[in-house]
Image 1: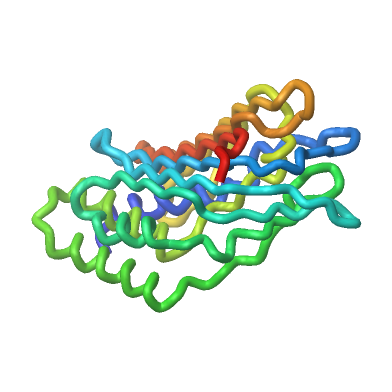
Image 2 (image 1 turned 180 degrees about the vertical axis):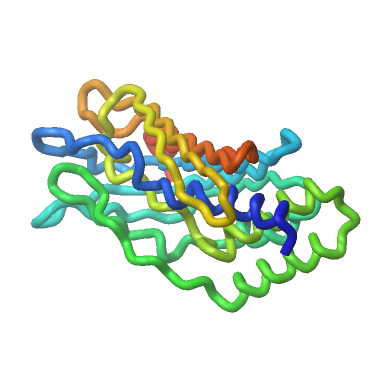
Length: 239
């Protein structure tokens, strides 16, 4: 593997190492989410070096259920849209078909913070689709920079094909902005830095999530990659 592809792959994967950064302290007081169905929308944007991006938007119809020690969040996938540049069509098709069956139910504690869920292994079909995408990229006559970026994106999905960990304070966030920088030690003498920027808004009456964004910028010796995640929670349309 060339150094360029290694750097691009590392830059794509490194934001996942920073997902625990910039977590806010738990909010005080009781958490009282509504019992009515809600629409949770998550938009994930992987920015590419040439100004293009892979953008996935998934909307879920969700409902909070009170339990003895906290809450259960049930949900079903309502809509998926994926935008991807040439060379990543196989991965875009995979993302459109992914049912997110293992995402729900989510568990929250009594204060409204998410409890960490175990990782789920990719299926055979998913592994095959990732392999097809990597093979397609290798066969395309792409400029070195484009090929490195595309292979780096595939490397990310091979490492963590489902999703980054969601913020623990997502559904009851501390409103406002926060920013954190972390140095990342790398092999081959490279200096890495990950910057995580959070912007959160909550409903003034309930404290429930209104909008939450997380931007992770990875800089590996001047090679920069950006991943942006956005969540919104709104009343669900009538079924």
